[in-house]
Length: 95
Image (cartoon, rainbow, N blue to C red; front, side, top):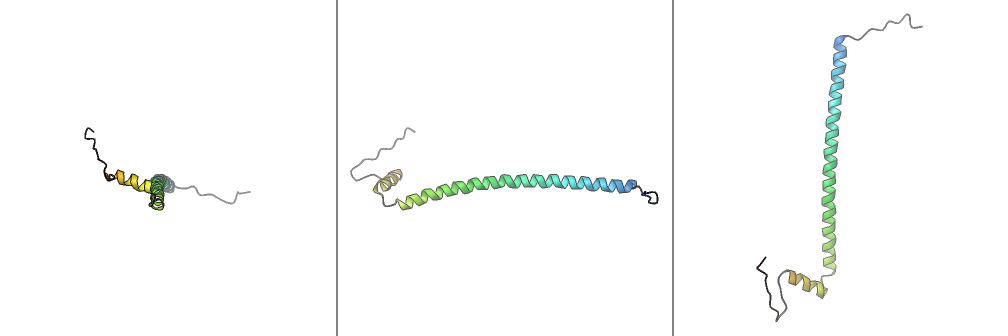
């Protein structure tokens, strides 16, 4: 059936070139895999930062909404070291 067709065998140089290209392709793929992994890790870190910032924003929004609440105003004032008139502030210097 294929008697009239002769196949030419690849020479040594052609085989070396093909092997070299396969090695280059393999190392490129490994490098890309490393870059993808690095980008995924960075994305996870950034997502954590976004989540933390959203939580902080939510707390600030709640604080703004409740800014006229006397109990919250008193708590914030006390956290900043203010006292009511007639009260004495004691500071624990023992640690």
